[in-house]
Amino acid sequence: MPIIGCGGIASGADALAFARAGAAFVQLYTAFGYDGPGTCRRIKDELAQELARRNTTWNEVVGEAVGEHARAPRATGVQMLVQEAEELKGLLDELADRMNKDDDEASI
Ligand SMILES: Cc1cc2nc3c(=O)[nH]c(=O)nc-3n(C[C@H](O)[C@H](O)[C@H](O)COP(=O)(O)O)c2cc1C
Image (tube, rainbow, N blue to C red; front, top):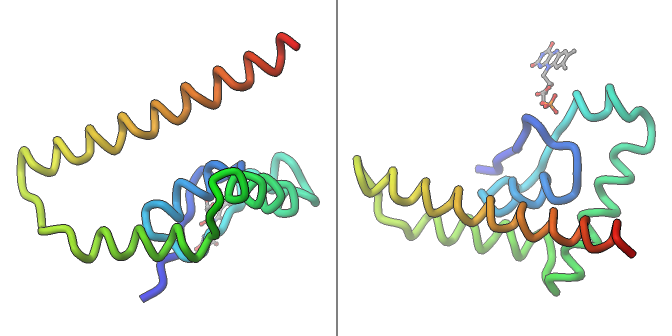
């Protein structure tokens, strides 16, 4: 069953985060409301750049995520909290990397 991710997508990195959670497609509204025509193209270009940088493709990312979640034993209670904390840590590490990269670029 294909999953369509939505809610808070405003950049290629946001879209990629949904693919890494197993979404085969994404939809957005609010970012389009703020940025207007060209938003989807910008997000697509950012996404293409990010995928190329990681030497992977959208289908590969989604396929890996779906495979991972399908194999994962159903976690309960504390296990689930630990898993979520680990996922959150990964996202925060990625955000820190991106912010450091932005700082580096701004200081050039
Ligand atoms: C102004 C506005 C109106 C919306 N109207 C509907 C609607 O009538 N039916 C619906 O299923 N979703 C509606 N949505 C939800 C969007 O289709 C979409 O799922 C959601 O806004 C995606 O999250 P994002 O706005 O953070 O990108 C609406 C969203 C906004 C911002």
